[in-house]
Image 1 (cartoon, rainbow, N blue to C red):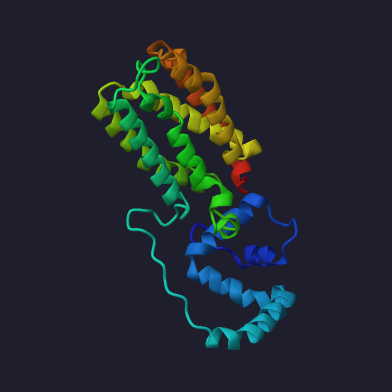
Image 2: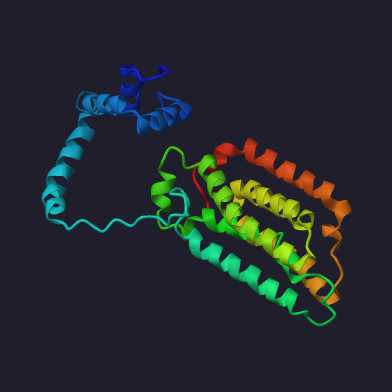
Length: 272
């Protein structure tokens, strides 16, 4: 494929299918066809000669569906919310609202001065490290995306879309947590921001094997059982959130990011 257009031979090999073309070449060609009208026209012209069976099938489907489509009433166009990017999952909106509600609830508990023994640690600090993780998992979980099948079939459905959706979820949740921490004056961003990023990258890394949703659920369960519950009972600052543990969180973040990059091809078909 040249810098501007695909060659006729490449398009012919693509139409024949099989194993003639490497997977990365197929991906690059499909991504190019998305934005190149002349190459799509060349593809349409080559179909009858290179793949007559496909052309006959398309013609028969068009002949059968044409009258029904002409008689059908167009569905109303649903525009995405102005503040939600078009590539963000529609189902992420209620989950982000849920995350906001959790922040407000924790903020209310913190400002009301809960009684001992758990009054020494802000309830907001207990949810802040894992709340962005939950939002990111909800943005990617196929079970929550009604357009998952269509999304998974596009050439750019792998790691780039996963990272964009994760960034959208973090951009919506992290500022809310920062504002809540500033209002309480008891939760420094350094205590939870780096752990939350480490949790998120770890979930994405594990998600290449077991699915992002399952990985996020497992990490939240571990956090709740090993950290949140004991802190809620004793009221003491957890060891893992002390300033001297930040290098460990930074290492976990780096390992998670490196694993995501190393296994980037595993995200081509999103898991639940």
